[in-house]
Image (cartoon, rainbow, N blue to C red; front, side, top):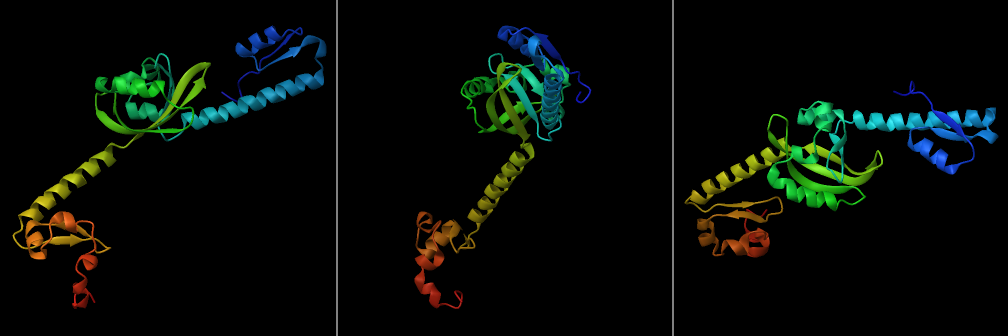
Length: 239
C-alpha cells in the first residue's frame, strides 16, 4: 500500500514495443538506455511516486466511501471491485462477492431487465431508478441505482452506486395505506365533508358534500373554493 509500494522502472533500448509491453506489465516507467542520467532517473521516479500517490487516494476514496459502490465487467457481469459499504450491505466477504456476478444480487425475474440496461448504459452519470436486490441471507430490499460505463483493469465495466432505500419505500407504502384508510373513513361520514389545502384548493370531497355544494367531485378537486363560490367572499368565513 502506498507509500510502501515499490517503484518499478525498467530500461530498454529505443524500442517502443518494449516500453509499451513493460508498462502494460506493471512498470511505472521505461527509460531508453542511451539516454539515462541522474536527472531523467530522478524525474521518472518522482513521476512514478506521484502517480502511485494519486492512485492510492482514488483507491481509498472508493474503498472507504460510505455509499455502497461496486464495479462489474460488462461482458461477463462478474464483480471486479467492491467497496466496504457494499460488502456490509450485501453481507458477503470480499472473496465471496468477487466470485459472483451482478445477477446474483438480483431476483431472477429482474435479470432480463437488468441485462438490457447494462448493455445500454451511457458513459455519463445515469440515474437508473429503483431496483430490487438480495442480501446473502435471502432478504429482498430496494435500492436506488446510479451508474455509468467505465474501464477497469483494462476491461469494459460499469460502476454502480446502490443506495438502500428500503425504509423510505416502506414508509411511503405505509403513508399511502393510511391515506386510503382515512379516505374510506371520510367517505363513510354521512355529513358533508371536504378538505382544502393551504391554497384553498379542494383535495377531498365526500358524496354528501357533492350534494350540498351541487357540484360533482370532478368539478371541485384541484379548484380554489373562492373561485368556484365567489359569493362566499361576502361571508364572515372568508374574512
